[in-house]
Image (tube, rainbow, N blue to C red):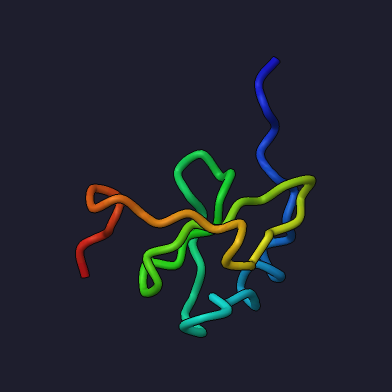
Length: 68
């Protein structure tokens, strides 16, 4: 059984920012994380809830960084 993408209201996503840099968050390609390119962090989404805390975030790999 394939995981369903999170059901997060796009308007709410527009209001969410990285708790560390206050910059915009973007969906990961598979929509399981919210990415802060400025902080180089990926925040997981569990049960349709973005976990925007450092203890839950993972560092982005070099190849995951987007080019400005």
